[in-house]
Amino acid sequence: MAIPLARMSLRIGLGKRGGKLKADAILVETQNSLNYDISFKTEKDNNDITQKAKTKCTHLLMKNPLTKVLPEVLQKVSL
Image (cartoon, rainbow, N blue to C red; front, top):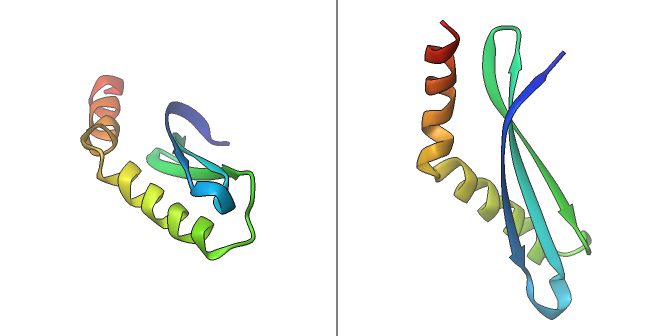
């Protein structure tokens, strides 16, 4: 079972046709490893704009320095 440890959210507007997009990166512990589970919530999920935004949000969340350091810090604290 996955145990959620931390959450980071990013919300962006996609213009008149795209609506709004919310991306959540949840740090979970599974079988002694830490991984991110990224989920999206959107008003309109049927266009190319939304897919490009999901790709960009994933990139921004994973590029965040806190996203990179947090798993290492949590592993050291749990030792």
